[in-house]
Image (cartoon, rainbow, N blue to C red; front, side, top):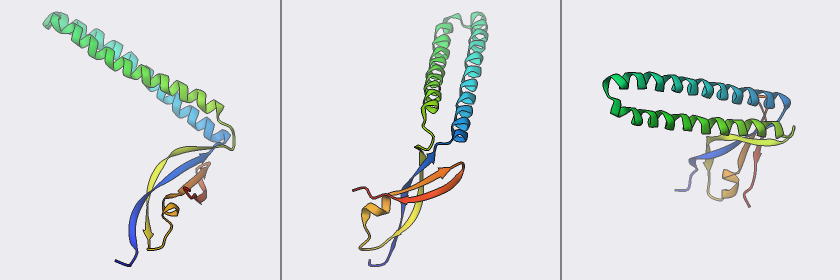
Length: 140
């Protein structure tokens, strides 16, 4: 086979930090924290209701039900702690710095003789929701 070959590759997406970006990130994180707080309150209400029902129907099931809800609460508390840490980190981001936002896939054509390192060294830089640069970064 001597012709071109089409492949998928991973592209790194970076965001240039601006005051607007920091504000949006902080709002998204705070919203996530509020949702987790609401879920924790719901779990507290749910366990009270479950215990009341189980006392009538199956008192032996109360410890297992409490343990299940407690496990769910712990998951949300851990998620809330991670978000709180992320919120602190947003405040520390320097304006103008670049942070990885994620990855996406692109399709590209390769040919015999292409530099393999150049095929996968692609980044997209976004600033205030606009693509401002597409970079080829060699991994040498």
